[in-house]
Length: 548
Image (cartoon, rainbow, N blue to C red; front, side):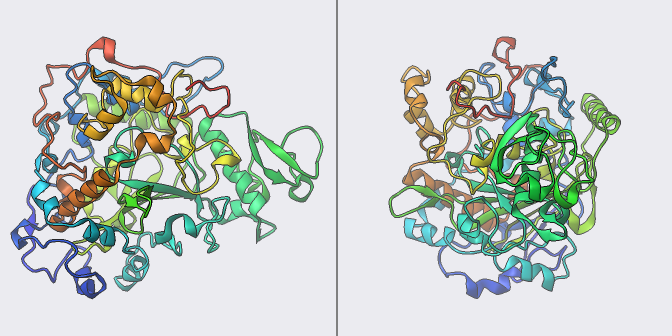
């Protein structure tokens, strides 16, 4: 379990699936990235893990000094009231802001890449080289490669996805007819901000019956059913929609007791519409066979020096909903998770061959990541094992997802992600924008408080946040990097690609991390009581009345 093998030949890559993407080297522009010594290149074991606590993310090893709190965005306990009486996530792990529930294995920080000095590597790569590298398409060939290797898991089918927003129409619907839909959302605080090394997008696809009326594709039906899912996830009583004909759909969408030609308001429904009209809308769960695809990309820079989403993907992540859980099953799953953590047991998940890991909550999860030459390949056992901590049982998620609950609510949120002009909407029930809140509570622009550019842009000399400056900025201005930082972060990450050392961490750092524990002392609480935060909600208040 704890052994790994060195790659002794650059003609062989991930042996457990028999892929040999290095033979495609003629497709790559030569000389863009430095080569590394063969002894530095590793591949994880086929069916085991050298880090048996890989589901504990690197951020959980942050040195908080007892007062800097990045933990609250993941670990939350919720109170219930008559107006908000349910939440399917019963993990209630806000206590983890004040203690470490780590196994003996987890007390040692296995994310070695955090402590690598990448400045010498960065110096070997010019800005022109990295700009060329990140603008290469490493997505389009993936489906063919997977088929050629008899891959039995998910095979990406969206055409022109490498071109980011160009693959979708103005309502976010894929132009190729595959049913993928892009939505605009506010990135999760911290790691997923572009200033910390990556841009991304998230897509959703419902099964065929949710897209059809009388056996034929119907855009109105699809968008209404997607809106019903959004209402369920966010526990909304109503939502605005694109104009829809109730008569054609034979559905009273606004529940006014009559069928009207055009309506723009959708009230909560018991059942979906169209050919899915016999399917009940599940409570805070996605329907069976829902798919979510998430591309994590480098930070692109256009000719104006502005942040864009480039062609090259660092990762392509995929989830598919295979099972709805009833209330009893949900309760049992969370009880089991809490008991395992209290007993400090090592995490375990069932791998369903090429389809990925079962997260115990009705999802299968699989990912694709860059090989030595930058071509996407399936993640190994332990590379996917890494994903399970955040997408299984932490208190903040809704049906184990992050992005969709943070979608711009209603029809304004259907379309490819666009941070320009997006307001710093507050978390549900909060009074300040959740970016402003994070900067104040965490004390830095990433979990480790080592993003010096964010520190200089949004903090005063005394370490306090410049609240008025933050309030005047949109999300794009708040969380995107300068051209210089973007290039440096892109270059730094390519050293992880060249060494194929993802099992030692994927976080982008230029110099060795300082505010990170190498070993956890469980007798010292992560945070003092007065610095813990309860009630933060992953969902956002996009209403005009929201204060920010």
